[in-house]
Image 1 (tube, rainbow, N blue to C red):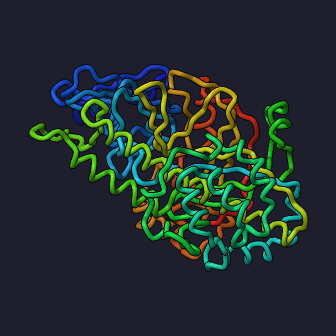
Image 2: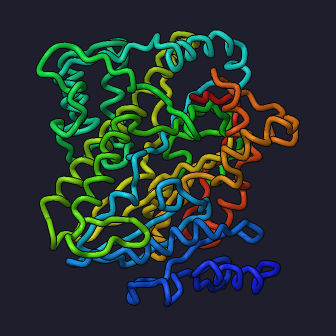
Length: 484
């Protein structure tokens, strides 16, 4: 079934300089011939459930991404978008996935490098949790909002985490534990490293990190580590509401009725520092005498400057390593407080995976995901809803048509500006906030991140199941959400 008023929509998009076609829930888009300076650019595709809005700005951003090429060599091979597709602030739509040959595109990741999801479960019932909820919440508010967390590290631990991520950090911590990690079960954390995408370790370089975080010696007290961040980032307490795939759920340690803890955060100020730096460096490295691309998306060419490409990838990996550790510490702070309040709780890791990252595909080619996560065959995939909706633990099916990817959430349908401007006049029911337990120090955060701001997660999940991108393993329902 095609969307209502499809022809009218396509004509309107044509006036925006876009050639768009529709077939079986997939929109195909490219820049109109009079705008497209790259006639060999691939046609980009967007998978959307019926009835979902199609935003011209996001489509234009995706078509621009598909058209990126470098005058010295290097081009986009494929571009697509997942169903949480919506406009991005830096010229690249959220939900975009792009395969490139002989070039990388720093803007296609942006500054929120290795933003991602992490999921733990615990053998606690909702009733047990609610009986001591207030004590737990006050402790977590201290750690997440008021700075009572202690994530002090030696200079060698900081260098290790930037250089080798979780594995480098663990080497240093096993040798000289510091901060609250002294109370942690480091053997458990070591075993769990294999449940992190890429083992939580990429080829970074501590010399590329912010200088103040990697001193020659002494202790480092980094105010960014173990923090949630703003926007749509969160830590959420959930209940495993329904198991769909009992075989995989058993293998992954998932049972109905368990408590779950889902974390959405990234590389914080380190990502902003490295991502912002490379946005300017990519522009400065553009071939002299060649007109800037109309999209102002500047790629780096392997043919033009291979060392610059290598430097960017290592810089991105350095920030990504920090992101892995940030999520690990958010989880570990929570796990330590769980044990303090509820006793000897194991709360094992299910999986941790990124959704803003560049990864090698084959020699001299890469796949970059912005607001889309890897969904390789058999790999766990974590897709959250809003704080008033279900979240889903899925398994990837390695669908090559969508670059083995899946959505990273439901996707916004109303901007934060719109919610802050008009949401305050709406009722809790209209905003979808009835019954939502949101812990935040900023009252406006509840409104900006209200469920009404997001698309229906069930439709986003179902269309990806139908398209053969993922299968559902378990559904989780929210209990309370910490928002930065």
